[in-house]
Image (cartoon, rainbow over all chains, first blue to last red; front, side, top):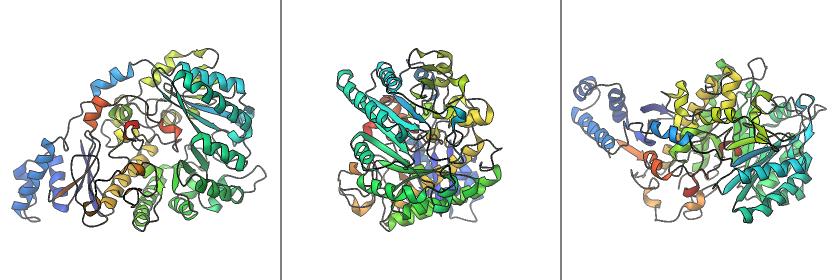
Length: 495
Length: 47
């Protein structure tokens, strides 16, 4: 499958099955479009004779043929047979989302947990429940060494002592079991203080700070229970924390809704506040909610991603770039095809744990009792659910068959699918459209930044596109997360 | 090539042979709680 599109003046081509990304001039875009439509060489030459010189068309066809021979265009999909084998492997659990507090000190309007009220079922996870959860993941993780535990909520700092005690317990088990815990924490910042920062900077692989962007947007959606906004309290603390973490290993993460369709301004507002690692995602809400994203919002949102993509390029070229999480596609070091086929791992390698120790397939299913997969005392009690989730993959979703983005989203979020279709094996159409747009922008950004010096030479094989004059054979590995590459001192996205 | 520039990418078909270790980060454990963005995850062996 070959996918062609134009974005920001770039003619882009994705060869879906090989993952190859090509940047085309006008003639090759036209030729490839015709070839992709099944036209033969002579038909292409005839169709383009008024527009291009025949020799040029012939030359272009030759280049396309060469790429096809290399497996970088019109490549076949050889992966389907592997998915059954991969799905049949023994289940291991390697990641937990601990709902450490079913309580919150904010009342965010879009909260999946009833504005922090949890439909009357507030509660804090005890140390004993958390310890059993960690024991469960150690015992059920097979040969996986890296275990991920996210302290989530509600607001996890409302149960801070238990967070610290669980981290200590996890660390105490690492050597004996040859495991390494990678802890993460998501917080709204209300209770954040130096002690929490000190602890997290030592122990947390990643911290996620919840911010929605502009002050008026943030304060509208993320108020205290008395209606007062939280922006003024949390932003200075988050700015301080981001600097303490050297602008790395964190994200400011927000949610946009129908009320801020111009969300690119919110991303840029966060960048203007000095944040370098930014993520904003569309709200997932039933269409009955006033803030839900609607079908008619999609074109507006797509335009916003275009605006944002241009600004990402502009700021990167000016040396004041930032990372927007959903534009960060790792072309040369991205995930293997198994990961791309099988998705997020919810219900199998990834489970959410309620304060009372119930297992859910992921945090988005929290509270939906028909999806309780087991608990910390008995382990998995619903192997049928585990099997159902393990069978979710790119090929199990009919809508993905002809989608160019399928190896970037792995078929999308099962919880979104459930919320909108009452099937875990379908898709959420609005989410798909926005995902496709983000991927189009992300690939275009790669092309634009590789092209930024005007003297860019590309190579087909190898680890990275060579940026002509600046490639000195240095080790660029330091650009893995953010900021400027220490080796070549150019923005990470460009090196 | 004169008309087509190719950005360097991981060879997906090669990754059939070398991938599948499962040590990489779960996508929802990062800053992606609603979007299932898998393509921007980093392979543990590429770090």
